[in-house]
Structures are given as C-alpha cells and as structure tokens.
Image (cartoon, rainbow, N blue to C red; front, top):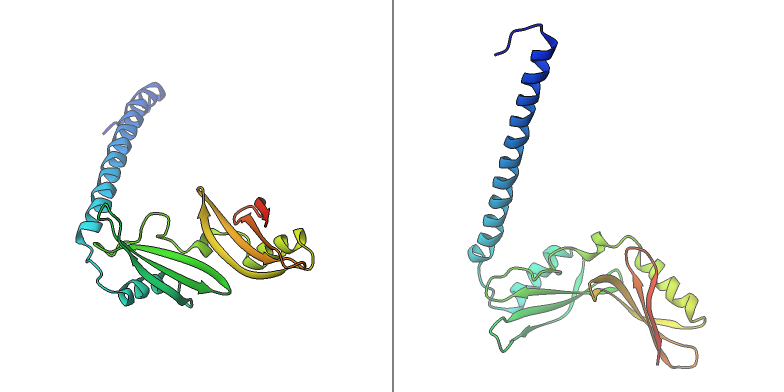
Length: 181
C-alpha cells in the first residue's frame, strides 16, 4: 500500500496500477469468451433429440407464443442433418422455425422471435406494398430472412388478377425487391 503525499509517486504508481487493471480486464475477457464458447458448444450435446412433429411444434410455439401451427414436417437431408420445419402464423403473418431433429436445438437464424427483431409492423409492410399496387389485395405476408436481410414478403393479387410480390426490409421499411408476374 502506498502512503505518500508526493504527487509524482502517485502518478507513477497509478500508471503501474492502471496497467495491471487493463491486463486483468483482458484476462477476464478472454476467460469469459472461452466460457461462452464452451457452454455454447456444450448445449447442443446436452440437448435431447426430438422424435415427433408435435415435439417440434411445441418448441416452435414456445418461441412464438400466441401463434398457430399451419403445418410441420421432417426434412431428411442426404448428409444426415435432418430437421423439423414448423410453419406458423401469428397476427396474420407467416413465419417458419427449423429445429435440428438430433438435438432439438433451433437452427441458426431461427433461434429468435423475428417479430422482436423487426422494427416495422406487418401493417406498415402491407401498406408499403399496397401503395405500389393500388387496388391490389394482400394474399398473405411472410416474415423471413432473404439473403441475410430480415424482410416481410407481401404476396398480392393485383386488380387485373395478376400476382405480385414485394419484399420490404423489416428493419428499415425500404423496398428490397418488387416483382409482378
């Protein structure tokens, strides 16, 4: 312990002390990252496989409380990485969840409620699409990742009966893609 009134001594010892604090903080950060990595890799190994569509639907509905299941199925991939695909509808918007069958863990990109990520509402997205096609009606709206961007995909039927799709960035409200058929 330093007991001195000499300002220069305090500054010198303070600099040494600060250097030690920074080194300690770096060590704590490294250990913290290692712990998160170990836990992150351990969780799938500890998770239990799911053996039915109803189990997959239960997991999906825990993430999207208040949603209803439209359909679900087991996707068997040739590489052995099978997963359950659960299609839900919540507040008139379709979403899908993919759950790895061997572990019961949600696949990356499907592990959070997309409504929590979106900053614009489904109504705002629909209105943006309808402004591009006056007189059209909305067939359905889907919230999904498209090429790494969270979008509302609004499917329309135009007044002339032709179909149209408008993709709206769910975070900015910008039209990402607009195609009429």
